[in-house]
Length: 112
Length: 113
Image (tube, rainbow over all chains, first blue to last red; front, side, top):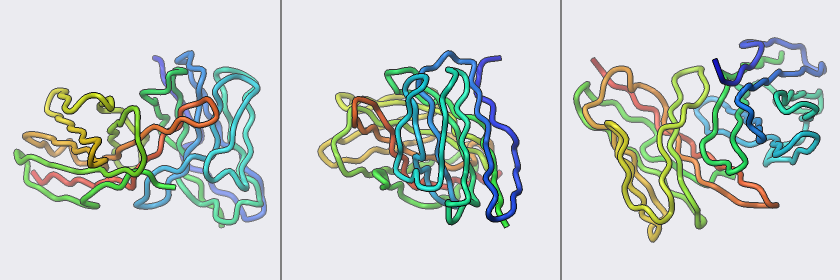
């Protein structure tokens, strides 16, 4: 089956620890995106990548980092510098024309 | 920044009724999309309407776009309990040679059986 996978579904971390969220796609899409969603809110763009080895900051990149070493993979690291990391994180991909985005199931991160 | 704002924030209707939700945006667009999100899940693309289109249909979905008012509406006809979800509009923004999408805050729809 083609699609996007995110793991794990739930993640718990202590404050001060870095944590990496996985996102893998087998849709052969060039573009990949990371969004953050807070309760009752819309999605806010963290980082996006149009091509391997290249990525751009979104609207709320502070405290996050990404890498794009392979077309299929776009991991997101939530660093200890992120002041309020508890949220639902969604990964998406699209073709270069960037019309329809395909979303993964999300990772719910809780930092205590 | 939130480009799209959905209205109402929440909507509760009986099964079989129609549901209408609206989206307003601030800057000019090339296209507008609607997505559905079931609780705790990822978003699913529903429909895309281009700026030169005024209306589009897909099954029980009808989307309208009024670029002069910078607004769009999503109508779900003959609603079912399975339509219970949050619905988001997304507008495109072309910057630095790439397209990004700005999502609204969503409308939470509850369809009562």
